[in-house]
Image 1: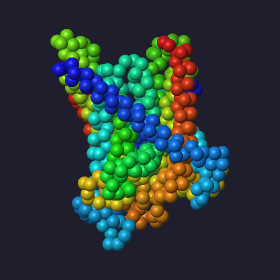
Image 2: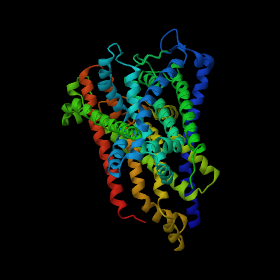
Image 3: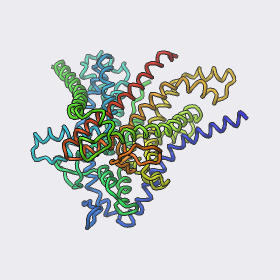
Image 4: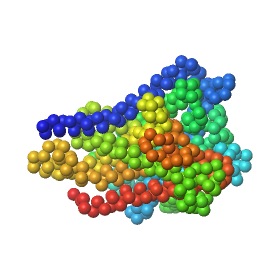
Length: 292
Length: 280
């Protein structure tokens, strides 16, 4: 009797663990099935190489490049903010800050990481955009710069805390060795600790950029809804995520071509973030310096 | 010269850190400055409206609370169960390894993709429509990886000697897990689960995907009712050009942040309270 119970419980727990595999399968199947039926109506080549994205008005165009362009602009812009600030604050936390300062700064970074993205979106349109337009008067109300800045702030805690973890994992003896040779703290930080923790730091960059690519609410609110091939950060653009939101907010009939675009664009988004996440994991494992 | 460079570098790093802190203060101050004047009991107890003076967040607040409870009921047993399986039962098999890699990948999938899954699977596939249940199931899948990973960490922190003592007294595996490992890991599990739920509380994108409506003038009374939630209401107000709605969005943000802060405070209290007793 007891053996049956033990076995039943083990099987039940196993199915709980299986739920995560089923989730992945569900995501992949949902995306693939509708994406395939989308490609029956729109040639895959047109989708991947077209430079006009206009699925809602005639003549319809289904070139995804403008959306990818918008997404990459936000990701690059956010990286420009988050990487320098993130790494500098990680160096400060790991190398310079005393225990007390760490205890104060770490929770604040955690809070910053826990703020909902829609709040960042509000912050962008209510504070950053007006401020930006003081300096660049002909910037559009909705622009890529403002969204990039706010997404950069959003991913900063991620870069900072993951890089901090990586640097703190560098053994003390390495630092002492460099000090013994007469290095200053600056030299130890930049020539010993950062190179030794480089795999973890790079992994944190990629993970943060992947998060910026998938970011939705802030870019929907701040970056606008005009998909275009531009590199001008003061124009209104549209990202893949913002497009998906835009379609879902409207009344899109089930099974229509607009409905299917959600899945096709979602597929591109999923593949991009998945590759980055795997890349990040691979770098961390492959190039990790192991100290015994 | 080298020393000046070093000093300069230190202050540069300090400045970068300070800027992060200042930004947080600025963000909070901005929301408080614009929203505090709109906070009132009436704001909490009124339905959304075309007229900013009459608009409130009653349906959004209740929607969020419902959503949170349903999400917790679905995701916590599933997530803790998976964590127990992976830590206590699975061992080092290839299947367990695949599940672990899969979970860490799922944690990096953008929330909007979960929304697409929810739309295809729950709204259309299971014909749940744009209901609370569809929203809660989607949210449950979204936070499942966080719940599993944090519960695993809590379970891993329980020392092996506890398990072996229990086996030595003749307990079965499940008895050991049920009466020794889980109680010892409970504070850590609870903390992780509350933090995961607070993430679900702030998510808007998946709910927009499954079509949670924004103009809802009633509070839900069953899991099959349509609903709205705080982040969606905030998004709706923030995307309107009229300035009064921007203030309403700020007031909504204050309520949302207060709720999140309360949840975080509870999580930290639990952690601090039990950490004192459980020193191995």
